[in-house]
Length: 419
Figure 1 (tube, rainbow, N blue to C red):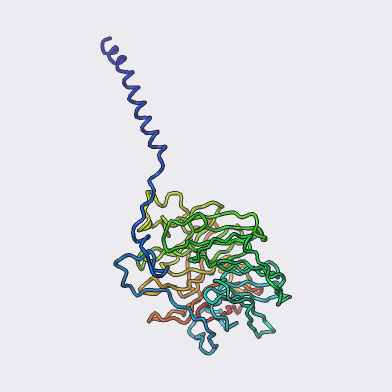
Figure 2 (figure 1 turned 45 degrees about the horizontal axis):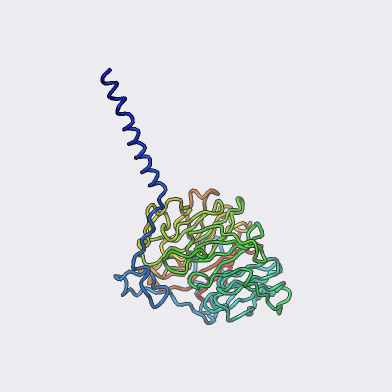
C-alpha cells in the first residue's frame, strides 16, 4: 500500500513533465525550417553572367561558352561525310543558310519556321519540289528562339516580345500582332531564351529559366507555364526547373517530358543535365537546391534539399546541353523507335573534355522506368575536341523522317530510313 500511495503522489508531477515535453515538441514543429545558406560564390560580382557561381579556385579556368557562328556556312563546308547514323538510315543536308537556326515549327502547308537566339531572326523555309529556299520573316529581335505554329499562324517568343503572324504560311507579308502585354514576360535575359509549343490540350507551354547560373530565383523564374492561345489563363505548372529548352508530350499518356540543363562550375562531372517526366502539375524539380539524380548544391545549402523533389527519368551527361526532345510517332523508322525519344545534346562548354555534340535515342516505360540511352547521330565531335556542328532541335515530318537543326552551321539535316 505504501508503494502504491507513493506512485499515486508522483503522478501529477509526471503529467506536468510530459505536458512540458509535448509543448516543447509542438513549438519545434511550428517553427519554420532554417533558411538556406548562400555562399559568397553565389553573390560575388562578375564581369559576365556565365562566370557567376565560379569558385575562386576556378578563376583562372579557360572554360567559356562556345561562340556561335552567325554567318552563312556554304554547303561544301558542312562536313556531312563525318556524321554517322545507324545502319539503314540516310542522312542528307535538307536546308542551309540559316545562321543560328534552332527550334522548328511546321505550318499545315509544309512551310517550316526556325527561331534563333544570338542573331535575332526568324526564318521561313519553303520546299519547292525538293529545292528549299530560305527567307527572313523578322529580324533584330532579342533572342527569338521560341517559335510555335497553330494551324498556319506563327507565334514568336523573344525575351521581351511576343508576336503573332496570322496565316503567315499563306500570307507571307502579314503584319505581326504584338501580344507581349498579354503574356506578361519577366525582364531578365539570362536563360530566358525559350522553346515554346502547343500541347495536346491546345494550351501554349512556355518556360522561364533561372536568371543566373545558380541563385535563389524570384517567383517569376525557374518554372514552366501554360497559357491559352490569347495569353489568358496563365498557370505555373512546374517549378525548380533551371533551364528547359526542349519538351514534348508522351504519345500515349499525354504527359509532358522535358530536358533541363544542370548548373555550371561544380566540376567536370557534376551535375548531369536531366530528362524529366511531369506526371502531374505542380511538381518541384529541385533547382536550386537539388540537382540531377539527387545531388545537393554546393553553394546554396538547406536541410533535406531533395525532399519532395521529382528526380529525373534519366541523367543525360554533365554539361551536355540537352536541347530538343521529340517522341517518334512515325511509321518510317523500325519498330523499336516507336514512341522513343530523340534528344539533341548540343555539347558542353563547362567541361575540360567535351561531351555531347550528338543526338541520342532514349527509350523508357511510360512511367519513366527503365530508361536507356543509345547514340543515334554522331560525328560532330572530333577526338581533339574540335567539332563539326552542334545539333539543337528535332522535328518530325509527316512522312516520318526527322529534321535536325545545327545551330553552329545554320543547317538542317534530314534523317530517313530505307526499308
